[in-house]
Image (cartoon, rainbow, N blue to C red; front, side, top):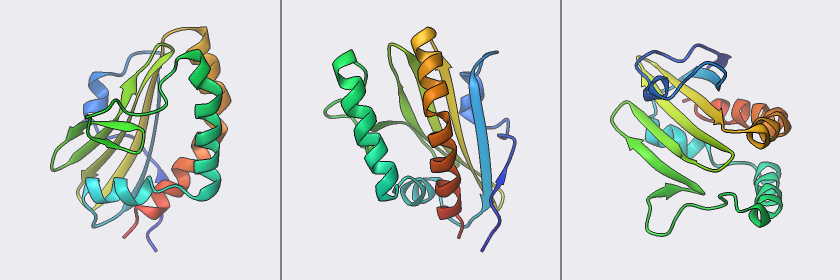
Length: 149
């Protein structure tokens, strides 16, 4: 099986147009023959424990008016609206009151890159990011391993 690794997001990614100093940006990559769309489908099919955490997150933030699902009529993968769907990059995400975020799956050569960009707007956004980061890391590492192929 191909080895997944922490990596640098290639500068061809559209996420760089959003990125500013102080934003969160991580990136992992793995050798894969999958298209970005197929890699996203495989990688973001979360295990039961991660789906459970997402359900808990939604129950906790729904009373605060935060986004818990894609708007009706919008093409989405799970709760994440599709922002970009091109031959080399597939980007999901949304802008919310506390933060903006995107998940990008980029193909470059024989590698698939999985990156998450987050721009917190306020103290609540920065606190939320700190709280979910340990779970995010576990979920993303599992996702990139599922994208190998």
